Length: 462
Image (cartoon, rainbow, N blue to C red; front, side, top):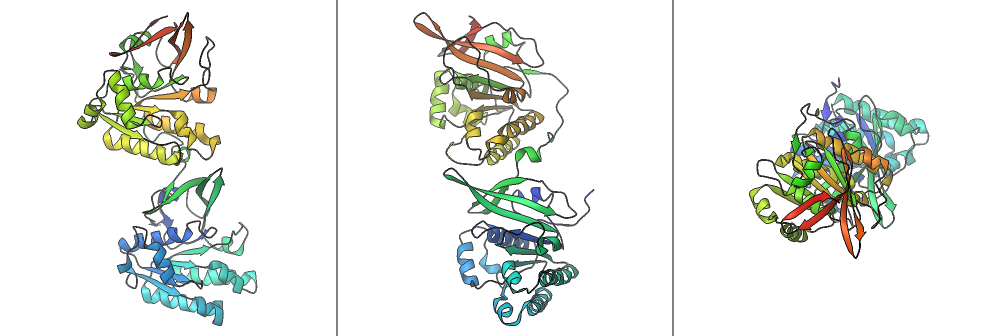
């Protein structure tokens, strides 16, 4: 059991990566190229720390004046000018480093830690200290002496550097943790990423995670599949059913959809996937609310489409029976979408979710190789929270009797799989539905015709 005292950063997601926060009294390197976000991260932690009663010493070995730093930080909501000179002290050690060397910098910082009674010290410009060291041992000595005094004073230390230090560097061997921030260009997009390269004496979520810089500062999104390797809550041991919104379909699948199950409706564009999902969330009530989580239908178009099927989505939203979230597919982070979905589910006690579509959610993923792991973790977490899910997936084949099912990876993470497609019948196109998989229930595998009318949707044997 982890008994180490923690210093919370107050940065959304970062404390989750660190399994509770930084180890109090330890030392860390935060490294990243200029513009990567390390200075914002450190200052955000500092201002959050003073709000919680701590005292921060921000020392710099850079020639850049503090006024310039304050100018850029002032655009972020965590920046509080009234704390500067009070609980958050900024000190420049650049001249001391240039004129007197590393030993005098250590003496200066030791005095300031004691004078300020600092519980966090941030030192920006570790690369400059390294350049002043004649030998690697001098860098180790510099870090060691600062660590020793800081630890004695109960002060946590963050060293900031723009150098891409490797794991065997003198700096890395001396500190307790290394956090690397950076950004990567993927096509026309730039994605910011954070990685915990070393966390001595403490657990952490390994691997690379995405983050963004907002007006509130940095927000980190731990990879969903790394946080929810197992569902956070046990599944129900009771098998109950909920109606799909299509009574005639329920007759073919054993009385309805299993509660807390995930149903995938696959098919080409225009086959009726969204209409099936509208029927499903159209059964939501204030006592058992539903959520439409969509990517292609705007709220206005969704309302019109629902009205054509006999559902008043505006009234349902007004009563709290239905919540609607629309996400553009042009930008975003897939983990942010996952956490937003889970947050809305928890906050509103959602029981039905319609995701339209998984393909739209997958489009925003920077790393396509982890999409299936993400969906597996997300659907598992929704099941564990007692949510029944219907999701759509677009396939390419428009006509024909050949079953063009989604890949086995996607099929394996869902409980039920329905395929809708077009079939030519003389001069007319018919919508047909195939039930490919229903977990935990017997079902009729007959080919069904889908009929969409003003009073909703019905199915019958083709």
